[in-house]
Amino acid sequence: MTLVESISNYIPYLLQPSSILWLGALIGGIYGFLTISLSTLTRYRYNPTVVSLERNYKDWNTTLPAATVCPESKFDEDNLNSVLEKQCCINFNFISFNVHQFPWVILKHISDKEGAQEFLDTLAKLNYSTFNLLPNFPAILPIQYLEAVVNMRYNFEYTVSNSNIENEDLEEQELVLNVNEMGLCYSYNSQVAIYMNPASWKSGNYTHSSTSFSIVGNPLDGDIFTQVMNMDTAYTVYLHSPQEVPDIASKGGSAYEGSYKTQDVGALSIVSAPEIRDLTIAQRKCRFPEESNLALSPVYSYNLCRMECRMKLANKLCGCVPYFYKPSDDYKICDIKGMMCLTEHSEVLIKLLKGEDKIECHCLPPCDDVNFVTETENIMDWTLGTNLKWGLVKYPRERLRRDVLFGIADVLVAMGGTAGLFFGCSVLSLVEIFYFFSLRLLWFTYKKA
Image 1 (cartoon, rainbow, N blue to C red):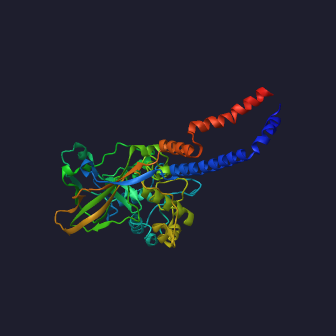
Image 2 (image 1 turned 60 degrees about the vertical axis):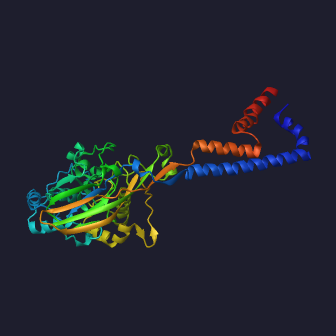
């Protein structure tokens, strides 16, 4: 007996009213089960987490904000003269570049030292708002800009003191030189600045390290603060999370030479439960530092993502990128003409907005982060150098916590309950039904044949 003949024998039974009623109930049950099950899977796929408020603040350690100091003085005269005396002879092994992009690279003797000094001084101060101020000086090539700015940099001197003086690790902590969208700056207590250091770009062998040191405090520790003292130049300071860096859209505070600036900040942390790591990035909608998808850095941060987005947009609009990004064969460094183009699009590049439409950068927030808000800020004249002090004078009593609200176990429980509602059975029973109407049926038909 063939399969068709076997099925045709059952047709009269299927046409009976009771069979039609049973079949309709079965189809309705299958529809309801699939609809609710798909809704359950969608919830697990797109919204399995919840952010709640915690108040047990005495159990927390709060991170001291990182500070990025950008000196107003951008070059040292002796270093500048050294660069010019060497005719801006750049070690081209330092910067990876496409020789087809500049097949005519020949270092020219720089006779106009004053013009070169004005050019390099202006170059070191450039950002997306001031590209149009750069004078034309073709003797220095775009691929030489970064090396020239780094080599002629101002000899930034300082001393650091810290509230946690008993911590031996702090004795080795220094401000880390880094290149960002504000030019050359120095960062303290930052776990990201090292990846924006020109020396790291030169070595090319840096990877993410989870052992970076950060200063933390507890309500039982009292106030925690840091002072950068004996500076001899005006500056702009940016306070941010140790897992973050400032960008051109960040708000900074300026201080003049011979001043004492203090900033007291408040903090709001968001932490993620360990189970969050078991979810995919699309599910939790955040990234941990080691989950970088960026070309600029082996670590991820929200501002680094926006910087890379800004860099790609600049390349799209003008066919080149500013010199202060990590060198790459994929991008041409802007010359004077390119910088004029960047000036025309400066508002779009800074705000990442085109009119009222947001430019999609696909930047996710960090899973663990601390947001700092300046509560009090003061500046006064000071005769003992130029000093900066920042710290936490009031510990937060609340923080946000990201937890898994709907995990894979919850999915199985929900689908099992749905199966029980519509079929009066468990998921295991459904597996058995599938088995009987597929493999078992084929095997039965084969044996009968």
